[in-house]
Length: 263
Ligand code: 13P
Image 1 (cartoon, rainbow, N blue to C red):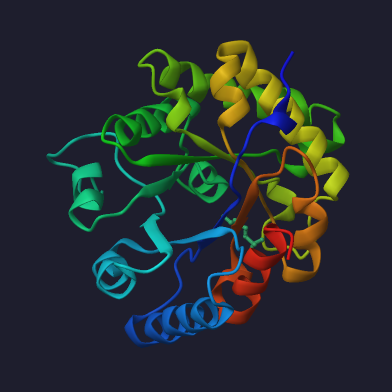
Image 2 (cartoon, helix red, strand yellow; image 1 turned 30 degrees about the vertical axis):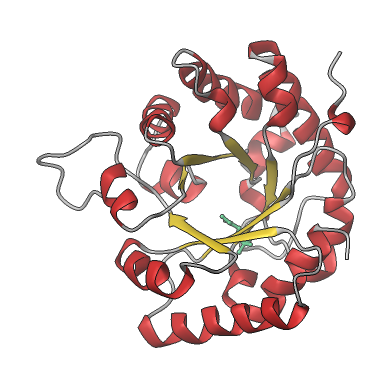
């Protein structure tokens, strides 16, 4: 039986900027965030990172190297190189010292028709190169109302997890549960709904690899705000947050990171 309470999973709080920002706005946001972290004086705080639009990876690397905030991409190609107009490869992310990339965000699943197979290939490409695949899963409101949310989300998890496990890479993954009905709506899942789904995700992972499952971090995403973060973080299987809108404000994002580490 899995004893997840016995395993240390340091919380991780990732800001997904989506298609927002610009050179000067990013500079103001990152310097604000670094200022808050430095003023905090190294107290206990969740690890933070930002998932930036690809053109700003260079700026992120220059601005964040040597500091405690990580950076990564919002999507990546599963292909190593070639005639794939508009795509960004894993090695390009590596050139800018990205540590991770989001894959399978619902905005890409819906708007770009990405399947679990495509998302699995992207996750494997990242993990194979030493980057963390931050794999998003979630259900629509119709699926939740039909009572099939757990089944649907666990199927998404299973397909990607099995592909990673076939290359012995499952332990590198981080999953984010992002109910589609909670994204950008101001209507977060309740802590109980998040915990129920996270526990189901961890059970699904443990059927594939119990040891990896106990260590894999499961983030919650969907209208996370500083005011709601502590109650989410108090759930035993919530190991951090993937934050959209609120990550565009330095103080709000910082407060979420504090709340996620129990401060
Ligand atoms: P919001 O926090 O704006 O709801 O976005 C969540 C999200 O999609 C993060 O990836």
